[in-house]
Image 1 (cartoon, rainbow, N blue to C red):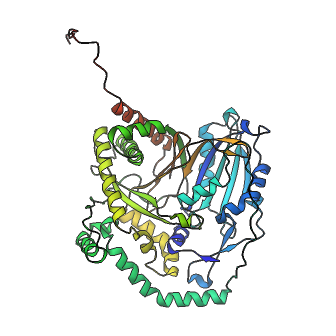
Image 2: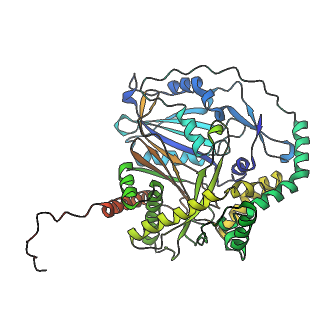
Image 3: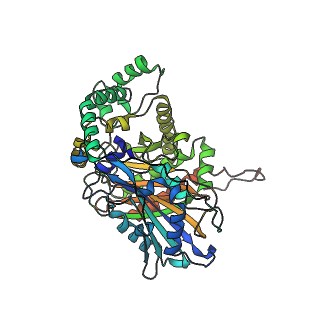
Length: 496
């Protein structure tokens, strides 16, 4: 039995009446590839029973510490029946994309039952063209983006014919601490917490200039630079730009309602733009998002005259920890050049900004997210987190939104014989992080975007998806080679 880390527990504490802290994804399926031409709930149940051991996070449930004095523990559910977590629904006619997105948003609004393993799957029948969809969600305290992709991969195959999976080895015997033992451990940890908090504070000092709000405090940048020079011997580090988030319609208290839109962009087009301008694919993704957000805000006469501030999750999971449950991530904070009218300027500035952020991230431990989560006792964070999030959204939002980009396989995959046509990820909205979240996942030649929003903040989420696709067309025009002048020498100019 393992205990949640402070960062894992933070995702639990963030939940409230208006926040559901699970990550999810929607796979669009073509059942025509399956042997029977159908994908059924029963086939999905049988697949999950056969491969559950390949996704360890799905067989665990939370066990709380008496009086909430410490972070909960994960305990194995030996008699788990996966059928209790798998559901099936059918869309009404015509079963188009808008209907699917509406149904997905409704499912995403609902929080998971903490008395059970924290996951659900919903098989959705009735899409146009004979297609189906699978919506799956897992609590963020159990997985991050990388482990979530690994969990999904455990269910998928390279051919319509399912691969043979070895039976699981007998699980090792584990001893579950008694409530009394957990209580005693919690009391001991509470007594030693000031020492651990001080260590976390010391480790955070080197990253003060990368933490939103804190970076703007007088002397924060000088203190961070001095700490790195004295204690880390990290040499000269690039100076971070201003990380002050402007007010936008995205920011402020959110409601419990959600809207969802999704769409795809050819990955080859993104790579062509990246190659043409000597930047990375992720830099192009960030530019697309900046352009789309600028267009959406400009339409509503709400465009700030300073850059938006985005939080970009970064996986720090090592190869030796691929199967561990929980989160191993940090975050980069970067300005987005939404204040620049010229698309070429936005592209170039975004590339330079991301290069600075990456160099800084590579040169420092970038552990401030975990350290910040460890600063206060478990009982305090459990009670205060959601309240602090809401107050911060009203007084001074630290960021405008979260943008995630998770790389995926570039070949077709199959689920119960059905071909996966596309996979669209979804993440978490909180008062603190803003009322819109953009997540993308590359798969089989496409860059697939999932946009989640609180309708109180972003009502027309499909328009934002449209702006992303328009931004890609704009960049492709910039990356197009200049017209050849061969064969036109000697032609007279036509008067204007």
